[in-house]
Image (cartoon, rainbow, N blue to C red; front, side):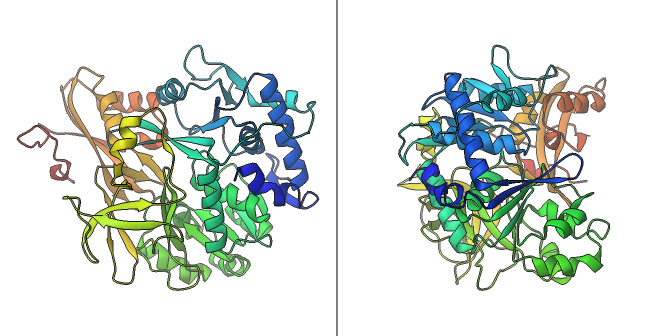
Length: 492
């Protein structure tokens, strides 16, 4: 099944029903019906086709949350163009790899002269693209697609730091949407407040797809803004909310949501979902006390979308990600490749209809992730005797900060570009707000001011990747074979 077919009951069948609310810079709200959303997508598809895009081409989209992001995604899925979202915080260094690897026909951006895209890459300003599309026909394109056609390439790195593009098909995305709408009881009666970034599968493949499949009303915000959170919650009164632990920490702050309003927000809500990073147990408990809701924790990844979830009906156990979702098979495997039992730690391996097709142009990485027909997630967990999984971390040294993945090797390689840095190691340190933050350990010449390294990182990396501290040490602890032993780095 293609996504166009999956979303027809909402976009066509509910054409006259309000589907999307948008908050403008002036704070006022505008509403689009599902029919208007459908027409916008068709017009943009016609404009993209006129610019030469066709089935199998790639289009890189580097935009914050806005209606044009949705227009582009829907238009691409109708043409068979593969949508390649890029994190809006990425700088030229990061974008260069995505563009070189995916080879998109163009990058769509809202940035003008200060754009940081690689040379010779066509850049289409979204405002100009949308203006041109407005005069196009709203008739749907005639492209013939199947569920096995690629719809999305999401760039995700392994712990080696080499960015890989996970290819997700229409079938993968449709199966994930159907699974979640059923598991989390999402219906057209819901009111979904969307604050997560759409360039991430959490916001796009979970939030947007469940919205369009269920036909509920969605309000799209550019991002979670703690300054306006109270007004947004009281005005829209969402029944459904997806967030990362950092967002829930903010919601517990009385300066963001005063205690006297929390119960009112809780009465309007039906479900709060958390993912992308572990939710601290104290946050889980405090949210129950303040809002009267038990947050539903779940587990997924770019390559496999949603894998596990605490139950909608039943115990939502703090610190766990629940059992596998319907249709998903999971097992834990030890270092020797054998399956381990309950109570033992092992790497999660899965089989799932949500699982990606392959890594883009990386047959080696695709093969390496396969273990006798099971996908190696790289995540380590323990399973209880009643089937709940508790994550224990990564086999590698991935840092998850505020829901974003940070791969230390990328930062280390940048630091080592300065000839005065002889050795560098980056690891995660606990943080009450973001879960973890990166910290850099360096062996460097005394003449080097660490402020220079911070400035280098800020100019070349997304803000969430910049180390929060740079610590000088005499030598990095290594094994006899020269591998850095990060667990031996000083913690104070």
